[in-house]
Image 1 (cartoon, rainbow, N blue to C red):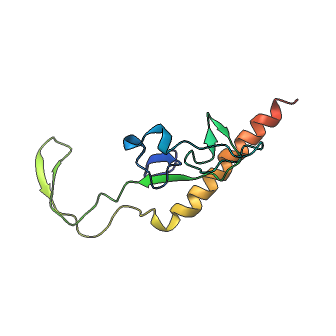
Image 2: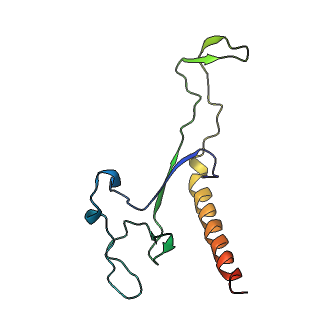
Image 3: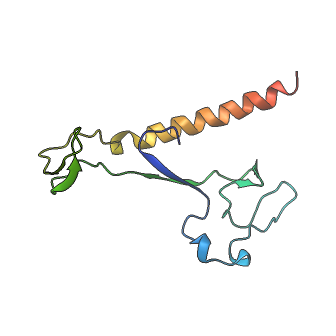
Length: 121
């Protein structure tokens, strides 16, 4: 959540609405001794531990707030005003989102590798 404009993070459950699902519908059945599962609804993490499957997650970003529609605002003196913004003044994260998310994911994984290796010292 340290990525600018990121507002939500969902691990696994790509096309499933987990709020409306039964546990039996989204349970990852283990099919081998190495932890491989038949499905990957958990997004590669079970009980906070990697199960060896691909990490799958979804991140939701906030859209830019400077829009050309009239909006009610309050100025620095507390007076209500109607404002219409011409042009875009917010940075758009769309072109940078994928490499930023990939980089942050790599840094988090590397951080946990370092934490794990420090326990062996």
